Length: 46
Image 1: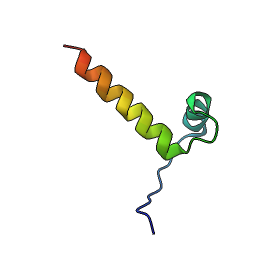
Image 2: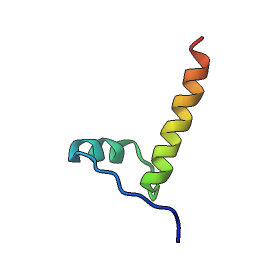
Image 3: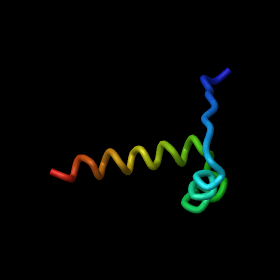
Image 4: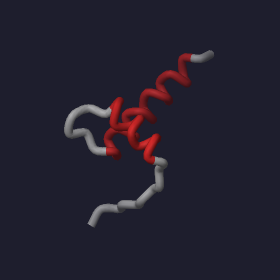
């Protein structure tokens, strides 16, 4: 079994994630893509 956890989101937050997610992309994939984007952007700030 995979290591899986549950997080609570407001419906508004879930809907915002759905707007930027790609077709058939899991929430896990989406969150990791957003983290990767953030980390790559954060490194370019300086």
